[in-house]
Length: 417
Image (cartoon, rainbow, N blue to C red; front, side, top):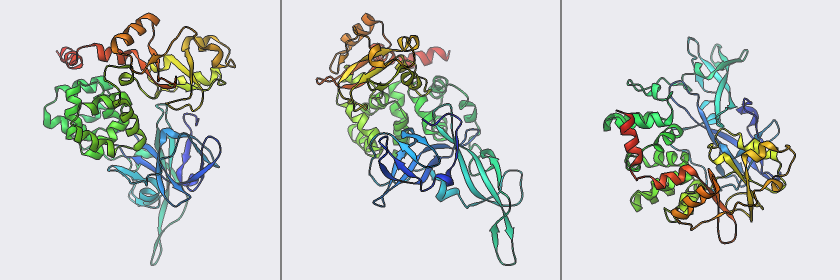
């Protein structure tokens, strides 16, 4: 995986070949999709546009880009061949920024954006961090870019760092934790809430919405433009998105599912097929999965990813290929503490907990809660009748279903007193 802090100038990787994990060629890099955020946060790199050999442009989320180097990009998972269409708020680096005239902050003379650089952040996201500028030179009858290239921070380019449009403290919310933002949204009057929601970016809003009561999640998602609502749902954990979709009217839910990226929508549809209070209805389809010949070092490297919730990082699951849910045959689970106690070269198949039995996908809530209490777990595997891993349940998923339906609202009210 590309190390945190790696910077890549986007023009230099334009047209580079894109290959899968087996080294098979899939296409070439056509452009990079970014979301420009107001305030103090750099533009977020959402994904890439891949040019297929059939001259079709398709979208690949940045989470699927496994590595980038000077010769190629490596992506994981299957490619969705649906033609790429940019969504509201999305920009394309090569199409919208490169070779465009700008006036950097504090300057008076225009320049040309020669290139933009993106970097792998500790959050697991990619962000735009620098711009390469070349001054404009005026001739007798022309203006052209010439002279030395200057590297500047993204904050010096107004088009990459627009000033906040709100006057009531959205920038302060961006410094808070999602649960604190949820409390602020819970207490806001309706007009102000809509204003704030429109100002927050998709990822940040999704994190905050997951901390709100279900009826308030429904109210918020319902006032958003359908394309924006689909973007926010894609940023939510699949099980949380499925719970929210299930609370919407059937026709509204179908509209949003059709506007979501197909792979994200399919995860939600799969979860909706299970009863809400069953193991299948509570699980996330994105646990940490390894092949039997993976090592403890491989497992720890995956667990260390900051985007993995702590509860989900407490256990890794060993399966036969394929390693995406539904997997091949489930072989067992390995506890994080066991991984940390063993030599890094030890294969995970040798560290499987022999007493851990998986949960059947149709297990009711009562069975799931007893299972967690019996094994003293914070994460548990869920399998189908063919012993394929379908996902994992975390203890917070169980608590969400055992507590009163309005527990989040009660908690927010008590904290606000």
